[in-house]
Structure formats: structure tokens, C-alpha cells
Image (cartoon, rainbow, N blue to C red; front, side, top):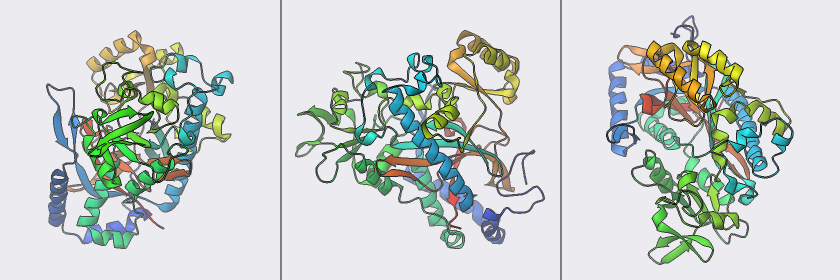
Length: 474
């Protein structure tokens, strides 16, 4: 049942079912394929009714698409999840310490473990954050760590999402859909719950409120508006947390506080979960033309009058060139070896690395250091000679804008098709909440799946879908 030598998470090579999938497989074999096909269609209808869509840009006009959902869950054993969780927590703590350091004493630069140019020439480094200490010392309140698996117990971090990680609404809707359609499966399998995430998020954000906040902290979600590709998620999370969803024009600075317009006048906000990029957050401090932000919010923030989650300037931890230093970063701030490995990475800014990459483009994956969503990348093994030649010109022109990695043998998980179960490549984005009270990792996360046979690109903008992710209790 494997796929050309790739590690299949459900099946061993001999057709034997792996332990975490045994109870699921026993149920599956008793089911009528026609009934399951009807359930697959029902799931799509549920998603359409709920309005679970995303916008695809870069065309003549934005196109709204349904996120494809597959009814075969991805199942992770409890012991494996415990090992993963320790590695994720270690990494997230190191990222937070790194962000505090680079905006204060820059000890990692002084120690020679990170070149100064990685900060000085980095557009994601915000000089406005130098010397600013966020309330509670937390920079990364919500983090998504993208993981890929290549074998038994072999997980690699593909990238870090410390700025504004998205996708948690799909994780929650996937579970809600599966619970609605297959309640008996959850009785059989003892799956750890994810439904507490909105309440956990609200609690974690409230715990990060500025010192001296009186009573229950007022939390709000800041969205760029309905035309943003993740607007569904912004509205969903605000609704699930029971807090206000606001846009920049709903907010203003009143008496040194950021306040939102209500029917009874302006009400001060303690914590703003923002889904607006740094550049647009404050027209007085960043892009003057921005209509999405709040003039003066950075001055309130610097004075300790509001918590912005995630903190401005955290985007530098998402940078793919910084990613290549993460093993050194983890070791520098924790004093421990990383529990989760990076994918081997060539920094194209280095002449020797660039020469190697140019010679081996057909075998490598090349990514923009600030890229996301699967855009602006080259997957050498599936690219045409023309695409490789075009990318070679881009690399020579701006080598510092790219990193390269080997093509990983991503694990496969079955999807449901008319012909039965078929293996497809997956990744995993667990969601992590950080506050002064500690680190909380939701058991599971968002599994993205490449629905095209043989494809390694799982992004929904590139034709990928999602699955429910189960972490077993035992």
C-alpha cells in the first residue's frame, strides 16, 4: 500500500496495518464503500454550508474555493505525540528567547552564532521593536510548526510560523465534521479532543494582558476585512472565543489606550489578536497609506498599554534563512541539542552553497526566504527544463533571496477514492499557545494532503486538501 518507497503511516510494506490504525481499519473493512462515498460528498456539502473557503489571488480577480476535505483520518500514537510535543515546546521556547534577544542585547550575534547581516539586512527585522518588552515577555502567543515525516519516529521541521499562523479553523471544522458523521469511530478509538482550542486561546491571550489590567481582560480579533484570504478563520475564532471581531476603522487611541467603537462609546482593549501584517498595523509608524491599522497603536504598545498577539517583529522567526540557523538558535538559548531536526538547508547567499545549488537544481527544492503558501518555489524533480533555466537566472540575480533543500521523501497517508484507499503525501501543522502561564500544544493539528498522485505540494492554494488528525489517548 506504500507509494514508491515512501513511508506509509497506515500500512507496512507487507500489507500489514500499523498499530495506531488497527481499530480504524477494522471499522473501515466493515463499511460499504458506497456509503463512504456518500459520506465524502456529505462532508463537502457541510463545508460548503459552513462557508469554509479560501481566496486564491494572482488571477484576474480573486477566486473563492472550497477547501477539499478527506474523510480518512491521520492517526498518531500517543507515545509518538509525546516525543513530538517535547521537541515542539523546546523549539517554541527557543524562538521566543531568540526574539527577545535580537530586539535587546543581541547576545547570539556577539557570540558569533548568527551573522549580524542576518538581522541588519532582513526586511522582517523591525527596528521599532528594539528595546520593547512585550507584556509578560511573550512574543509568540500563537505558533504553527510545520512538520514532515520520512520514517518511523523521523520528523523534520519544514518551517516555523511565528507571525500569524493560519489553518486552526480547518482543524476544528475537520473534527466537528468527523464527529458528526462518524461518532462511533471516536468511541472505538479514544481520540484526544481539540475542541477546547478556542477557549484555550482566549485563556492564553487573557493571561498575556498587560500588568495592572483590572478585571477580566478585554480581547478582540483584528482582521484586514472580508477580502482577506483567511477572513473565514478570523470571524470563526472571534465567534468561538466570544470576543469582538474588529477592523482598523473600528479602533482609535483614546486617553493613551486602544479602544473599540461600541454602541455605548469607545471601550478600551487589553489584548488584540491581530491578523494584520506589521507593515499595515500603524500608519504613523509603518506604511503611511495603510487603511487597515490603528494610528498610534505602536506608541500605546511601547508604553505597555496593550498586548498585541503576536508581537510586531516576530516575522523574522519565519524567515527561511533564519530557519537554517535554528539548530544553533535552539542550542544557544536552551543549552540542549534540538529534539526536532531541521531539513538540511543551503543558503544561496553563500557562494559555495550557490554553486552547489546551481549544479543540482533538478534534484532540489528552492524557496524564497520570505515566501509562503507554496508560491515562488521550484521543485526540481517535477520542474521542466524551461522552469529550471528560468529559476537559474533568478538565483544568479538575487541569491540572497533563496534557500535550497533536498527533496524529502514525505510520508503518505491514505485518502478515500472511488478505487478505495490511495496513498498521498502529507505534512502536519500543530498549533501552540504561549503565555506567561506556559506552553500548550493542541493534540494533533492540521494535516494538509497533496490530493494529486505523486505531488509533494500540500498547500490548499496549490490544490491540496486537509484531513482530521487524531492523537490517541493510549
